[in-house]
Image 1 (cartoon, rainbow, N blue to C red):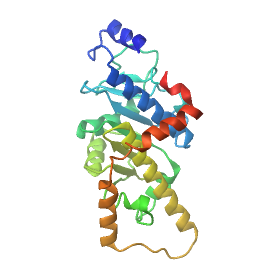
Image 2 (image 1 turned 90 degrees about the vertical axis):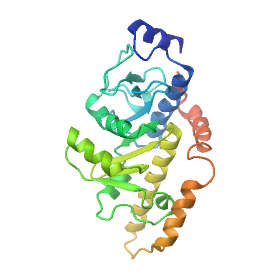
Image 3 (image 1 turned 120 degrees about the vertical axis):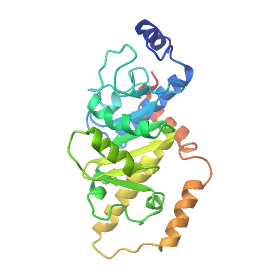
Image 4 (image 1 turned 30 degrees about the vertical axis):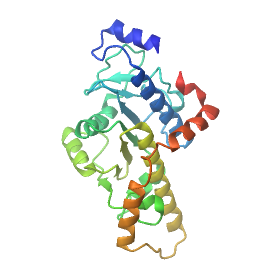
Length: 259
């Protein structure tokens, strides 16, 4: 932590000295990358997860471009501004084109602490289906009428497409990018990760159910609505209870993320 603080001072970065709150966010974000690698959601060096830096409006943490998700650590995450310009001295570059999507979402939803964009196979497969995610499981019901869809417009995110994308996300916790992947957000890294896990599992269960080749049964609309409300409102915020357990798992399987 001291080394990172020194780098910030040397660069005279507008963010100032790294705080304890930023260091904890770095640990959580690095853990999120490592967990995604363990779950098989990574795409070599592509896709990104960003976290807002606490008490530093307009500054975000992102993975170094060129590193695998399982190589991300708290200390090698890169701090950038809204334009993707690095604000602390770093030996790493970032994918500024990839950051554009995150910048658009963070800018439209300042309450968000974390934005995850993945090319996870289950989400791509379900997003390519005309009807999208179906209410076939409790996992899917978490997103009943709470999931946006964005049609594929090509590889490069233009400013006009960014506007359309954030409009389709709206106040939802998640968005399926058709033929592309998923986007999930949360107030914390933990909340975003648990939501992503729920969405990925919902998509995977749908594909398994459809593979049976028989007609599928879905609950009545009013039951789906009530279940979604209950799942969203039930108990602690998403991730609050799960995150410590996930970190214990990560400490056993991929402990280098804290450094």
